[in-house]
Image (cartoon, rainbow, N blue to C red):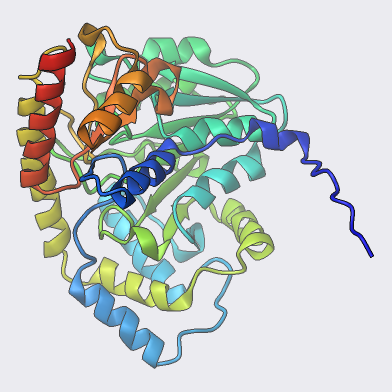
Length: 395
């Protein structure tokens, strides 16, 4: 008997699905390492520190106690209670456990928000340069992606007046991210309040991506959910990956009005069933336990930021503003005369420094690179030396 190879017929929507370039560059970099090259990894957005020991111990204890079975689709009640209390305190709003949904990572909250709220043809305003999954999911669902540029001359804050001009009768959702990936910019309280005023009482929902809220170097975070009248119109996205160095644990959460939370739980039932129960038990310890390790990590990222930005500003063709949050630098490389992707590829191939093109985060990222400072000061200094030597030779 013979079998015939059938042609793979993908749904049209798959052609609209984007990617996250950081993982593609990571694969390339790992390939170079297998060839014997020494690579300095500044491409991937994850802390290089270990998960705090108390959190690991709580997970091991949970496994031994049998927390290895299905749990509620929306998450364990104890973790939802812990998160509700933490968000109530940190955002200054009253949050109940039935407004919290636990998901495997932060990305499901992005996807679920759009699946639940956005119809084909609706408009979604999103930051650009910004986390690439925003634009990918908008396009995937057949909505119209409307970028709000984040410009260096505004310290990578969005222009509220420009945002107001982009809002139309078709606007269904606005995405905010502060501190922001890839720029490290923040949305100060005054801008948040102006954004709320620009939206007014229009029937528009907001996705507030606050995954880096604990990695802030200046001021205090301020969520649009804290603005009077906006809590019920906002989905807060947060999680454990960045704050507690738990990227591989895959655990995030959304905070939203109870009737929408019930719909997110239905989406969980239809996709993942539930988030792993033993990781959720570790999450309870992360939220309620000792917070000294996350604070040490924040301070270390600030120290690395200072070293790396200072070094970048001494390299020919590079200039870099001091990011106010997260663990990324977003240097301007326009004076090199090189397109962003070509330069990022050259630095990886020629120097072994793995970074990302600004265009990996949208069209408005042209002229920039993104480097993560989630590496040791020693390696960051070595990366600076390699880039400096390359520019002296090629510019």
